[in-house]
Length: 205
Image 1 (cartoon, rainbow, N blue to C red):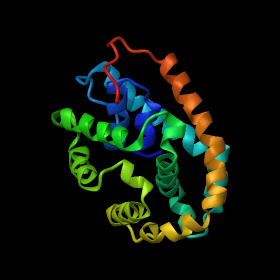
Image 2 (image 1 turned 180 degrees about the horizontal axis):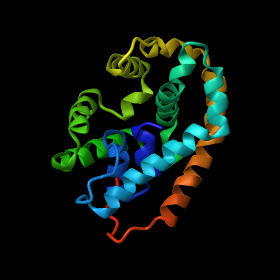
Image 3 (image 1 turned 30 degrees about the horizontal axis):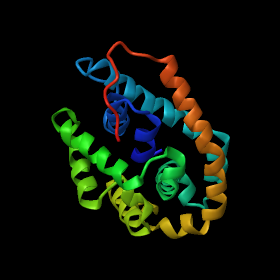
């Protein structure tokens, strides 16, 4: 899953949400000097990724992708599922997409000094493109996929994947509709099973 899903799945705890956003930019063991609940948020991000990659609905969705896109199925489905979440965000969250997205950017702005360098750079991209709400717009999806393609170390088709994903929109949407409620249940159960000592902070509005 991508950053819109990771913040939503973290619930209403600001440090869990921040950890969800940091997860892709922290490699190895998190710095023990970080707040304990922020570290828990990074661990939640990783648990969500493991659950997602092995889920039967995601495996089936990945199998729909033709070669050579299937090799990058994890990246492509993470992005496409955030797109589907953004398109129907109020149903999944009970909140408006634009205010929630502004809250995500504000969260990163307020904690900028604690962000890894990569996330500091990505925060500026988010500001410029009004993300994560922008993932609802095909042109932003195309730009995001092109950017990912250029950041990968080898030649790849990720930047040309949007027409493929669009062509598979009906079956991919079906897999997402089955998968995402189960992912929400998993994340909620994980949070309840992994409390940390620091008190929860205020979440996104």
